[in-house]
Amino acid sequence: MRSDQTTPTTHGPWWRTGAAVRFGLLAVIVVTLSVVIIIAHPTRASLADAVGHNPMAPLIAIGGSAVLTTALAPRTLLAGVGGLVFGFTSGVLYIMLGITLGALIAHTVGRFLGRDFMARHLSGRLLAMEQAVAKRGVLAIVISRMIPLVPFGVANYIFGTTSVRIGAFLAGTVVGALPATLAYSALGSATARGDAVGITIAGVVIATLGIGGSVGSLLIWRRRPRKTPTPAAA
Image 1 (tube, helix red, strand yellow):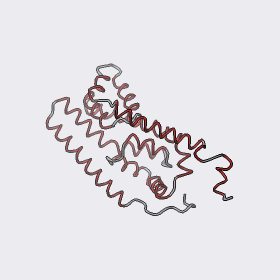
Image 2 (cartoon, one colour):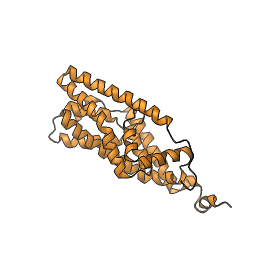
Image 3 (cartoon, helix red, strand yellow):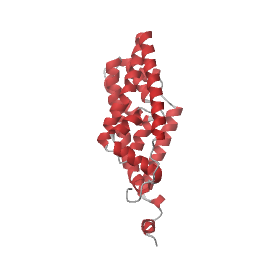
Image 4 (cartoon, one colour):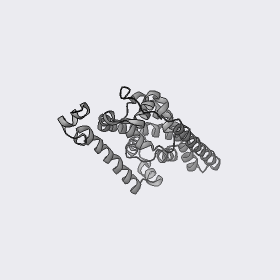
């Protein structure tokens, strides 16, 4: 019998292994959260009311942003509400703390539930892409955070299943998420003040980030790894 069949014979089919079961649970969690956030998505008004004028509002904003980021709520919505309720500077601070904490939680869940399975079964171009991301570290995370086609919340769980180091993940998340957080918080703050000029400027910045991210997505896709790693490299 071939050596690559030894493990299934000894421990049963691959899909009955603990790694596969945990990975399946991770997939169920991500899909469920995606469906729930689409059906019962929070609105700007509901989030602003939840924070209100509570003396614990900053902690509520940070903790709530962490929970909602883990639950796949759009970080742009959170940043906009942060600016609307707290103003530009405080809004950026609270929301960045919250979404970074939420990203760390999701990454930890992804690492615990999905890393073993991915390490054993990832192959071909997907393995080449994973290795390229891990090699580039912080830069790869920063770029992914600025690409609008990569959902921020889902990416947190996916990165947990890769070999990207936690330090690189956190640094890349902060640097990559900051521009959009600044822009949407500025938009929320300008909206609260009724500042038409500020709203226009923030809108232009947001559009620029979106266009730049889309162009970057195309360039990265054209330069994606095309060679399948050898078994030794894997």
